[in-house]
Length: 144
Length: 466
Image (cartoon, rainbow over all chains, first blue to last red):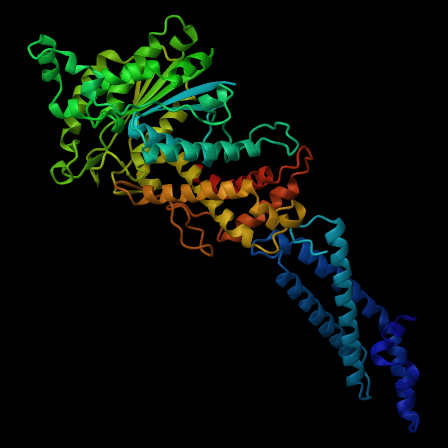
């Protein structure tokens, strides 16, 4: 699995993470195990990223813009972008907290990973919006 | 092109034609007939007459812009707003401008009938003095007949026969064309003009298409009063309206031969206007609207076996009429007026709507809203708004609409709950109509605008017809 390497921008490399615990072998092993577990579950990060990015773009350009309320405006598109960011951040963080647990203090790692996934999902939202505006039917304003 | 020549006689004729124009703009259907207005009012310089000419030009301008494909080819008329053609006699004569207007005269009535040439003791002089008062004889013909059908009867026949308008009508009236005459019965011009005009048409033996044209007429009974003439110095006294009406009706009963004769009137003279025959600055009235609907009814009818006399009533004689008090027979009128008033909202909102999708998809951008076509529509809409405002505040008031702001449009039509809660519902339907339209047969943005606006509005207002 090389997915986690996509998040090195935010969480650094495996070495930089485990080397924090080099003085304590037990913790060092726990850190390695944690990273390995994280790597094993990284597919979920990708799934959240894709599902949220696609889902929110579809939701904005289709059902949301099929309802009255001037949803075609930049304000509503930006709101959806904000919701995408918050949802991606929260879901990723909750997933890491409950399903990729550790005895180590990995709070910052989780937060940075959630932040990274949220940013990637937002970028995906933007890119899919460009594609939707160019090629797909919608009642929304075609910003690009 | 099937045509209906609509003769509008006198001030009431002019005001009814204004209502006809407004209803046509709202989408009332003329059953494929092009409306040819022929305005017969000897009143020179009457502001109302000038305004009507300008309104008709404005309508024509908008209509012409909707049937052009953007490359000077013709398209079928739209469904909905501005769906029927108005064509002037000047246009039929291939003149660019509507220069043909009914010629009034500045001379006095006594001069017109050459009273001065009669010797004092000539029996004809006594006859003239019996029929006409000194005031009648001294009246200038340039302000109409001041409520005196006895003057109109003498003058109008010759004026009609000699006018370019009537000659042009006779020239262009073809097989299948119809004639519709609008007049009031309680004044001077209309009361005398209708039977005279009808006689001239029915008596055109040399022109069978004219003589045999299916003919309808609406005669407007008294529906407003005028202030006491002793205070205004006017020659018109509305206290005589009913007497004159009865006399005219008795004459019409045996004389007029129209295939369909509609009567429109009030139960009492509820509204009292300023008594100023020069200005006649009267507000639009419900009865004029009712008289206007007679034309649309007439255009749906076939030739009857016998002469038909028709009128229409309201359900409940309220001072301010809505859908319930008007009755179910008025649903189409209420819908049409509601449709246009909603268009008026869209015309107001859309230029300010920064992210409206049709800006990109259909080119309805700032340039489009500043363009001559949209600006003409805006000016027409301003006049329409003013017309409805007058109707809704007159006595009796035609006020079936209730404008509670763009955020609260559910109750836009009184007694009906529309499914559109606010203006965004209509905007969304315009977008949907645009997305559903895949045809590439033209590039006329203005036509698209009116087409999508009508589809959007109709989606919600058709509930009125149920």
